[in-house]
Image (tube, rainbow, N blue to C red; front, top):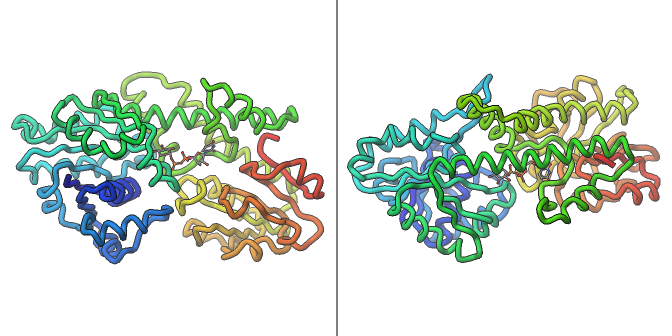
Amino acid sequence: MKLCMIGTGYVGLVSGVCFSDIGNVVYCVDKDKNKIEALNNGKVPIYEPGLEEILKRNYKKKRLIFTTNLKEAVTKSDIIFICVGTPTKKNSNSADLKHVYTVAKELKKIIKKYKIVITKSTVPVTTGDKIENILSKLKKKKLVDIVSNPEFLREGEAIRDFIYPDRVIIGTESNKANKILKSLYLPIIKKMSRYFRTSRRGAEMIKYASNAFLATKISFINELANLSEKTNVDIKDISFGMGLDQRIGDRFLRAGPAYGGSCFPKDTRALLDTGKKFKTDLSIIKTVVNSNNKRKILLTKKIDKILNNNFANKIITFLGVTFKPNTDDMREASSIPMIKYLNKKKCKIRYYDPSGKKKEFFNYKNVKYYNNISSACFKTDLIILHTEWNEFKLLNFKKLVKKDSFLIYDLRNIYSPSKMKKNKLRYFGVGR
Ligand code: UDX
């Protein structure tokens, strides 16, 4: 089939590349000329393991076309995916849908032959109805079906999530669109994934409900971690013991710093906003959002405690600053408020992250990027293991730091407290 992905951000690019790999011709469109030029030169603007290789393979086979020409791409395609950003609006909780509606208005002028228009961007329930209003003339002439097909791709694991999804959700009232989409997804749904057709509003809601539920699971275990710390219980045992109950499951029960990234914080806020618009109190989600915000302050205070409020001339090393491993994404990473706070305390902050230097810290006087673990840790006073990249999982701290006394604060509970104690290392974890 011929597909058009509008927006070559994370969702559009990963989906476009993966769709081409299962045999479709995919036009990836973006307004950003530099980005399109870079992509045409084989440069991938995001950090996603495996993506570059698949992109180059399909580009060579001419199944992937990167262009700024929306009209041509839409005209030549059967299915149009809207993959533009829906960030939180400034000073509010609501999702900013201006890019989605701009695309819909452009499509109104271009479409002359039947197309399926799909929202892959995360959009609040009823957005599809509004797009349908914009395209109402085309709808009346049966030239368009507007469908919701949310993505569930995790950064760092997006390729696998695309090829082996737990489910493909299609929200449409149109049997014709459903039939076409089922055949588009056939190579994937054959691999055991579930194809679930529901209403368009239902699909829009499933996406928010899923992210909000996962965020709730994380906040739940994070709050219990606070209690475990005070009662001398290891939260890892609690997660494991709970997870053995198949009704609960052990995934997304890892205690850590506040959840971050481009989805959970933004989508929980947007869901609250939708609740408000429809006069429905979503008290659980409200609590989750507050709990996650409070967590950033709580963990920063813990650093005060670990250092006995003695920051003078201290060297603090962050290992990993991204919101999770295998991504260069810094959006809503808990390292940002932590480093901001420590920078004010005038200690010397070093950081190393496998995905490189971060613009977020350019203006901080006391923050310096190191391009390897050893120099970042040399003679440091405190190591903060912020992100669980694989290369941080088997460190010999004494050899790295090369001094008698230093502290380790493991925000991801990578190491065993008893082994650390045995090795006479001063170690702090989360909820243990
Ligand atoms: C998420 C969803 O998982 C995905 O389905 C959706 O489409 C996009 O949003 P992503 O933001 O890439 O994916 O990362 P995810 O792996 O879900 O982690 C989100 C945050 O939760 C990270 O900060 C991570 O460190 C944290 N997390 C996750 C925990 O603290 N504990 C866990 O057990 C799992």
